[in-house]
Image 1 (cartoon, rainbow, N blue to C red):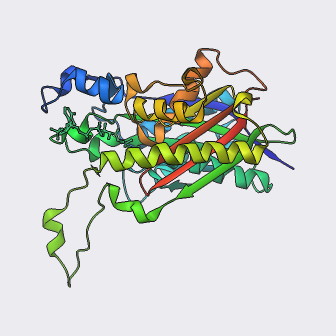
Image 2 (tube, rainbow, N blue to C red):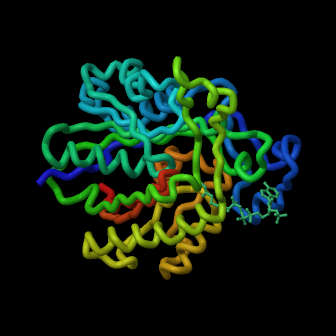
Length: 326
Ligand code: UT7
């Protein structure tokens, strides 16, 4: 059987840093509130780069580190909720800019779980033998769908992108187990509206159109802590492994308190959870790919290490991937 292994990683964030102090000039908030309730100290906010720009930079770096050429790539999947256009997809824009031959390219929408959904989707193409090299990107410019007057959301998010190149291997390593779940009955607790219906028969909704994120924070929090635990347990069970066998958990970076809660309830020491949300906030589809790059830079991952990447987000969606590093 073929297995999907990560052979390259890349990330990119805009250079512009927005601190909690900067936010106090926009909304009634404080560094103390943001740090104590979320753990976030600063985030990167685009001053002009679009999602496709962030995605391209992360993808280019992932490709460089993989040693593959752009024309070796068979498929590009970009997870995003903030594409430049409804059409073309961000993935197609990256495909063209990279010069990735005739690689298929499309976007996938699973909000902050997008990177995990995209990884698992890519792995299916590899495991079935249809494709050998797949580029997976998670990229979002959340800053364009924030209401900068709403302190309950604008302090949480940032812009950024992460990418990996997955490649087929005959050895049993790479992605070992995955668990993807959705609960559409909760779709209204985390929403960014799209263009409303407007045609010769209906016009009125366009007046109130506002794509800004609306969130019932505590409901999302409750969903997250429950489902992340479930997803971690599910992949451990599928892989017939125990929490002690796992070197690191790479969680979606939304709120430090969510991660602490999951650590406490799972009995997995907090030190095993990689956390960088203090510097980037919630970059949505970008978080896990950005974290992977930093972990590699810090020499944290060695061949044979088993890690779990786990995310949750709008939809509501959630999912985990258990992977043996190679
Ligand atoms: O990828 C998925 C993305 N979303 C999430 O993961 C969100 C999950 N939820 C959370 O992270 C938390 O629920 C929040 C960080 C969003 C909020 O924290 P909380 O402890 O649930 O606070 P709260 O919503 O209960 O609000 C407590 C108070 C309220 O004031 P009152 O009603 O008690 O007077 C809020 O108005 O804090 C107020 N508040 C703020 N104060 C200062 C809300 N936002 C802010 C702010 N600065 N930025």
